[in-house]
Image (cartoon, rainbow, N blue to C red; front, side, top):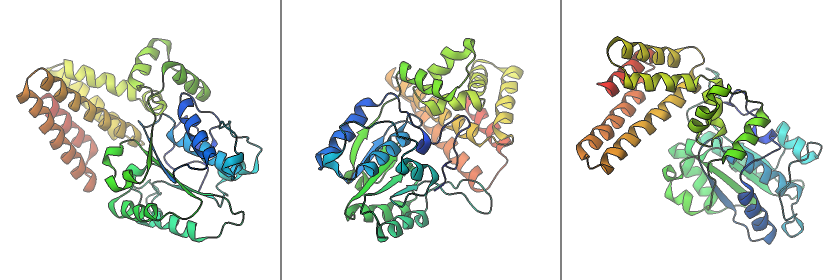
Length: 341
């Protein structure tokens, strides 16, 4: 495992190297107590929105366990990793024989991160547990996130969870646990993390040195919804400008509306626009879902059905475009036209 995880956002710190965690003190305290009791669960499902610190928490807990392999003598709190400690250095360099980080692999031919965690990646866990630990320490697998497991990979993980090896720990991360196999969820202890409160967001963004123009700060923090990842996408990937153009598109008509549509399509089809594209598609899904929900609550079931159907059609359209590598600019223009029609 390399220190810099494939797909790490510009301006972010790799979770394995992040020495500080903000806003999740209660979760850390729970994990420390659970481990120290000697009765902790072998698989923990760490749930919560993307970019709030789930992976950082997982690596901090892994560091804590590997530094204190005897639960009964472990400290009552999880401290910031010591950069000079051998365990911390081994984790950061990918040299630890006691931790396996499963995430979407990089395609050797294209150089791009694959769309899913494949069964070949999960097989690494089988080899990992088959090896004899020279220290007799714990073996920890971080699945980051489990949402990216394809069907075969999910079934392969399930088999290991059903009969876990001794002194094995699974830290299963998920942005949307409802999409996981129910059988995987049933074999994990859920630990829910919430969006970062304002003070924790300020601390996390301050650590990254993220510069937000004063006039945009309030808007960015509102749109970030307590997620550091969203804040980075809004500032470092043009997300704020794209969402602003989207709002202008919705309120405009005629040539002005068409101009905003082309502005968005250009931004999402340019070079190195993958992150911005994924960010906007997620926002679009939230926008349509909220529109449907609001209309349903107002008693306009026909309007709610329209947006629900539109969401399904757009998802299908985007899926086809991705599968057949269709022109992204034209695809986005078609999607935006369907929304304003």
